[in-house]
Image (cartoon, rainbow, N blue to C red; front, side):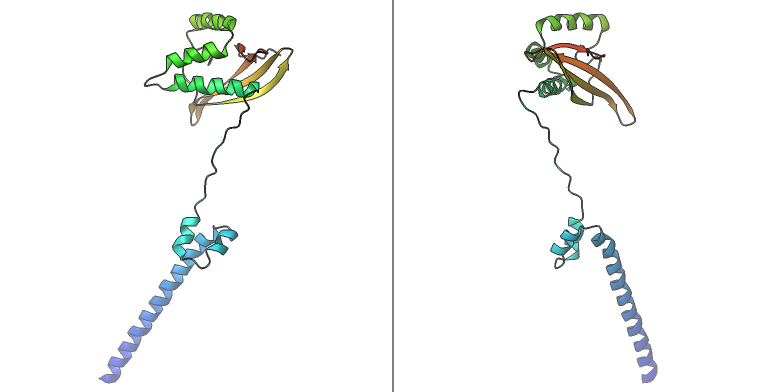
Length: 188
């Protein structure tokens, strides 16, 4: 009876040992893809760390976004105007019409402000944006100088996802840094 018992016990121990080896083997192989995705420099610093630390460090870190501007440049001035104007108009629950009017008064020439008001009355749209709604994104780029004026291209993107529409505006800034015209074709 002892020989049967010890034989069964030996079988059970061998099965338990095989299960342990299998479990450890699977654990190591499951860690390999996570460690492979970590850059070599991060692996070197975490070589003595616990495997859980590797999984946390394997997440990519997003770089912070930045916007650069210079107070004296025309492109920055137009970008500042459009950014603030879109923010004022874009709060659908409570748009700041007082701010939008103040921005127009500050950035637009008086003559252009009158022409823009007439365009808006005729077309039933916002003349600065050339639309009835507010864009989701915008970019501003230099288009060069024209005598005593400067032209800046403002590209407005309306909508989101796969249903977007882009509108390109040509903004003419006079030599005293005020917007003298906004059109859909270049003045050049």
